[in-house]
Length: 500
Image 1 (cartoon, rainbow, N blue to C red):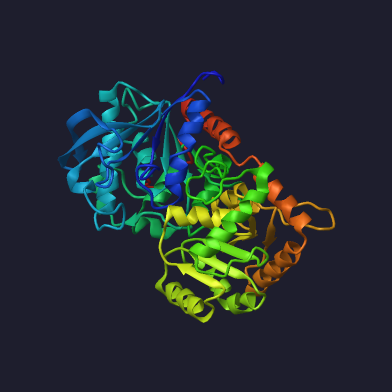
Image 2 (image 1 turned 30 degrees about the vertical axis):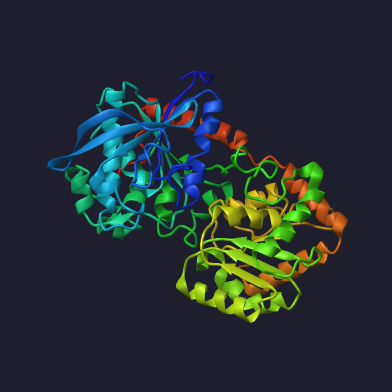
């Protein structure tokens, strides 16, 4: 395929903003396709039409009336609605009331069946749409069955037989593990089970993410450092032997930000809009955040912000061990998030013990999230594992200085500030240890005393190019690599015995 020829890409995702969101996948799915379209590619998004996706609100129109979708020995009906993510990025919504007319998105007993149906409906609809993609971009376990199908059930399909697959791992911890019945539902039980000499458990269960990694033409993760980390047992979530077999076609591409949405000069949620040339205006947002959090209004006190899922993975175990010592340093702390009940209790207890310094919001609110980015001085992400992370990038865009553990995408985006060389854009530590975290907070607070230094760090962060422009170009290269491998007849790694 000529390098300049536009590609036809089908982007499969379980969620995408502005339609449905539970995590970072939705942000990426809502921004990368728009960036790819700006590069001239014909990219189209497909996702389920959950009950929360209102037809009138999003201006959806029915594109394909009910048609049969094979599900093992029976069929289920799907219809397809069309909406727009941008004027030139269509979104196909697969509709089936039995599977998707529910209050939530995930965590249902029939999730395997729900997402197998979604994926099968997407492939079955393409002939009816009259559009055959060059590349199908699959994301996380929900769409991981598609590369498996393209090497088995659809290998001779006139529309899909030559389509290449790119499989993106957003978080290796969520693999979609089910019993063998999922292979029957998917219609591929006859092809056998996966086997790997270092991963005997793959024959005892169905790990959908493992199948995506194995069968895709190209695999990528959401940062270069995470792509290297997951080759090792400490980060590989038991899939590192399989990932090492795909190392030649395993890549890491940083996520980007949608600058149309992540922009302090136009953000409707913050008290005072500002940009890098008018940073003095930002001070009003700190006072506004303090008022909203019911903390004393004080421009000089350092304010640490944190927006996160509350879990060990996000570093709350080491943070909990030093939070009292941090608060002894005369700082304010504003946190928003939900997660492990243990951390709900811990943070609530701290907020009661330090009412003049700590505010905790055990919920999620886009309104409050933006206020924390715009009003905090330091944005904290002490993660044990962080595949990419968007929080540190949003914080930099808003002039809040990131303080992170150097792992995954945090290591790729935050360079530790060194006063001796005057280089760096934030503060980081490597050893996953409470005292390493505490020492880094102390170091950041010492630098906060020097307003010229702090303003320089803010300007560096706000001036950095964190948009999708560079990353989208890398995805285009990845798509072309997948097409070349598929055209050359590359079937992926040598199939282990009895692999489907």
